[in-house]
Length: 201
Ligand SMILES: [Zn+2]
Ligand SMILES: [Zn+2]
Image (tube, rainbow, N blue to C red):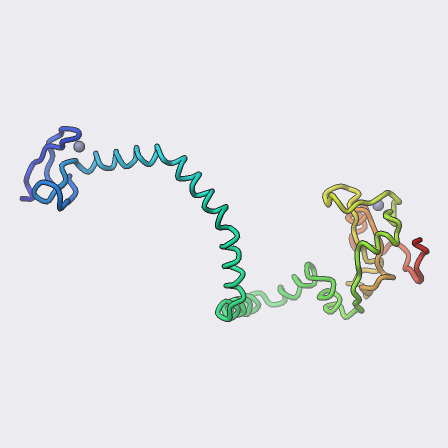
């Protein structure tokens, strides 16, 4: 049986039966097309449909993105996930001592950074600070804007005395700067501590 030679009805080649897929509906349990004819056909079909497949996949993703993100959100809120995440965080903290603290300090919210540096914290509304400072950079005097963050004149909230040097996160220790000046200033102390509010009317 294994040594049977069969002629492929597609390409016409005569080949040992091992070159044919098993098929219940085929003659004596084997397909009448050879394997390579089948795979060629499959490849052709795939290439013909590849664009369609891709389009379908994108369409599917688009339609399901919302569902998926909701699913992920729910997952993250589950007790199971919380446990996993806290396990992971613990392991990370052990592997990299001090790094999480440093990360929080550098990139965390103002509240976290203030707590980290042991300075005072109060809620500050950025926009009201910009209004107080008349929408002008307190170093170079140019007009600032909040629409385009990438422009040189993008409005930045700056700590006059940096939190890292004992400055507080309070309204009298913040000022409006343009992006350019803030980048230049970095961690140097510039500007005047506001002991009272200017009249903003
Ligand atoms: Zn063939
Ligand atoms: Zn400036």
